[in-house]
Length: 116
Length: 111
Image (tube, rainbow over all chains, first blue to last red):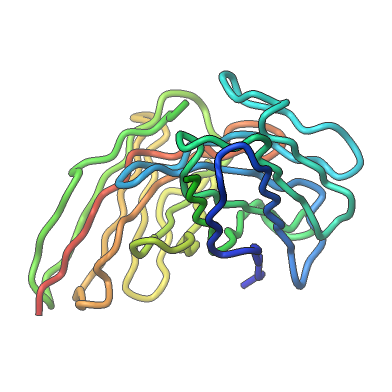
């Protein structure tokens, strides 16, 4: 199946700093990528839909100025957590779908963020 | 927001037994997808079933879809210890392919 990578896999940062997470589709082009957040022992909550070349669409309750999303190419989307606080600590997962294939979404391995 | 509900929330079985989990959803769908997640890892895609399909197989996995009842089931036959994971259903409901996830079923298979 298609491969989606995320970097970094784990990050620890101080409160107030910004953290950038990259999501790449390695062997296919993804016009649309999605960003999810997952708390321990809970399901995935969709944060935003990232479209190549246009502004991201955020889900209700997700602060767009807090979670900046950039989808500059057909293989790369980035999520920047700005001025991170301990409550932003979570597991962030991206996904991408191969628009030339079916609508299967392929997920990255996730990024664990810990804000101290 | 989560559209799907899954039951059971947790399932403990022995190797060789079958495991069945169910997913219900609320709105019309384009397709429904099942994923597996090992603890602390990303999601692995298992099966996609389209809204006009009723049953699909992949190896030891069998998925059914009943759009009249807005429900789906995932059956794992002859389970193995390596099947221990959380299983999520997710519904594709819009033109972008946005997925709404169920709460998940945590499956433990003991040797």
